[in-house]
Image (cartoon, rainbow, N blue to C red; front, side):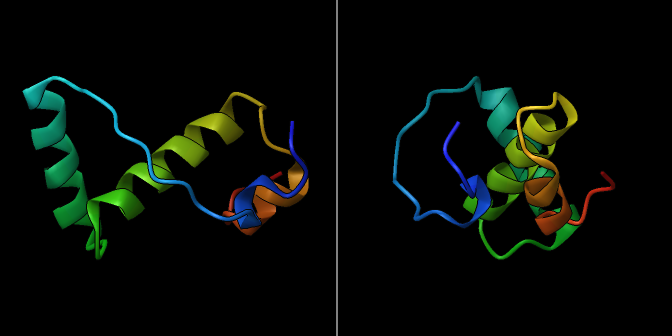
Length: 67
């Protein structure tokens, strides 16, 4: 795994998800008051990676997650 995953630059990609999932993500974005849908997806994805132990402790700490 690349060092310092949380702080590396960003790369734009395209993903396909069911319409219902996009609707749910938009709802989560609104509920979280995130400025963009990308922010919402990024946080949710990084939280799940951390929960599944794919991130180092310092990366989890940078996300505000208990280590």
